[in-house]
Image (cartoon, rainbow, N blue to C red; front, side, top):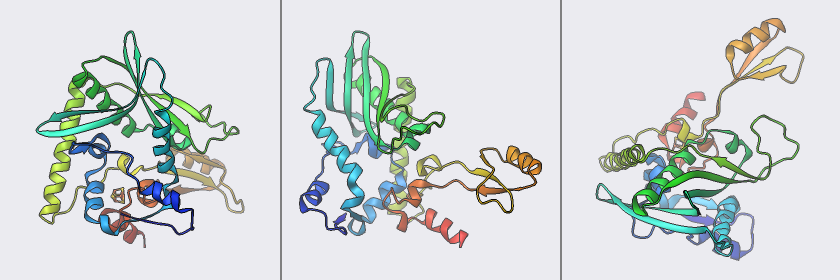
Length: 288
Ligand code: SF4
């Protein structure tokens, strides 16, 4: 991957962006790689030489890395920072780096820091649930310790004190409780992910199509229904239900404008490979 500097920012920032803060050590898969859609992992490997990212677009990932470095200075009794745990499953070594483990008399609480948006905090983030439950499984099976809680410590980068929407975080640092899975279920989940990655690798080696990314993996937003009326610029209301929108439109003598959901990971190229992805490019062609 090439890091560009379109906005002529100071060179030390480029150096910083080029440094690898995370090492998966001797493992074949880190937890984050395991959870990433196989299509993204395969395309990133295939087009690694051609992928260009501007240093300015790496601000939040650099701040994320900086936070991990700074956290090592915040050593506090009863808390263990930045531990990487390794294990082998089905002959494959996997590892996970856990941001923080709080030791309590009843067991461990696993905490993961995320620089994220208010929108992400308000969604059900399946990825967070998967990641933290794999960490739980690692702590339970490798360290033989009981885990009693999973939490995301969300650092909300676009927080606004004036927002009143339901579910909006109440402060720029917002704790999110994550549901816990049992170990047997998690082990099955990990084995399933390994199988998916193996199959994707084989498909790529044989020149076959890669399995599509699922809607939740593409960070698909919900389709909304705006009730509008001729002669009025803004919508009367924007609703989640088409049926409710049609009833209101009849009452208001207006019409319904459908605002389709958006696969934000694709449209924002957060996967880094959108330009080579047949699934997404095919959809764009269909809308032309
Ligand atoms: S563009 Fe979308 S569908 Fe394609 S690899 Fe990226 S996230 Fe997956």
